[in-house]
Length: 253
Image 1 (cartoon, one colour):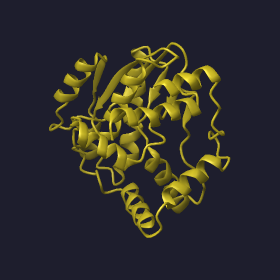
Image 2: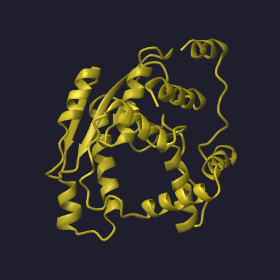
Image 3: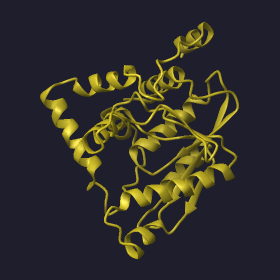
């Protein structure tokens, strides 16, 4: 998959759910993984022609693992002319050494989001882009259904009242496999997660389950995603139709 194909998916999601308005200053949360770096490439390209002018600012929360090297990401942001902020923390030490959490992901996520939101506000941003893709949407729904007994997943756009920030998810229409293809084809400098809990979570269990379901019944993931989009879930309005001018602009890209 090339950047133009990624842009097609991203712009469709941005337009369908009106994620970006004139003058938005969008923080791009960069974990170092394939998803967030693909989103960085896409939003950086989108800002050059999108009819609603916006700017981006990349932000990474450094959890404090000793073997995390962000040098290539810093170089990438310089090449793209995107401001980049690294937020140093001691989250890894607190979660794994001091508290020795049996379920480290919940506490880590809470602390990481707190540090990220503080950095976003300090940078003067009013929105933050998360790199959740189509697989994440369906996996979160299955997690909620299996372990909580409710039909729920995160929304394309979420207003955070406490922090006065808006979360957008521009990769909403992208399959994880397509992101992997883009990263491999374009030699994106992915940084492997040093977290010891990586790959040993309930989400990983659901990811494998979804992969098996889709293998046995091809298309089941897309049908689940369609059910989410059209099922009247909170925060999932039917996609808005773009005005004629924007539709024509899109057709020219």
